[in-house]
Structure formats: structure tokens, C-alpha cells
Length: 129
Image (cartoon, rainbow, N blue to C red; front, top):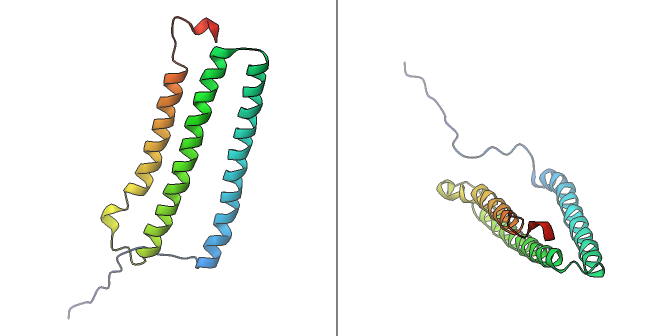
């Protein structure tokens, strides 16, 4: 007598589409709130630096603001790609390429960290800042 084993390969989704959306919306709203808060604070910092005529610091913060804005725009584009990837691969047939999605977020975070490290690197003129 031979026993029959049944294997299910792929993803297991315990939540329906509506339940997943219900859980995703609060996270998206919270993330958007943080982004708005950060940019409002940066705008206030830029105006204070300009009022005090601290041009060296102002230049660094402007470059950081631009880098952060680019990061946010790239993130929005990548989220669109993620939605496309996951919606067209319902049965997880392209599992070999799924590693790219979380790897991109790590690479983007690392690149922003590199920009911050470059902008605020110790130098001979650090006392001006």
C-alpha cells in the first residue's frame, strides 16, 4: 500500500483581497504622514538657515532635500512595479525574480545612507557647519 502525498507549492493567502486592503491603508496613511512631516520640517529648517545666512549648512540641507525627494519618487515608482508584479503573478510562477522586490528596498535605503554619509562626512571645514 502506497500512501499519496499532496504538496501545495506557492503562496498561502489567508486573507482576502478586501481584508488585505483594510490592513494596507493604515500603513500607507502613516507612511505618507511621516513623509509630509519630514518635508515640512525640512522646509522650516531651510528657511531658518536662509534667514540666519548659514549658506554652507543651507547647501547641505538643500542637497539632502533633493536626495530625499528623489528617493520618495523612486519609491512611488517601485511600489507601482510591485503592484504590477504581484497582480500579474497570481500563482507565484515568477518566484525566481521575487527576491528583487525586497532587495530594491535595501539598496534604496543603503543609497540614501551613502548620500547622508557623503553630505555630513567629517572634513577640514566641519566647524563651519
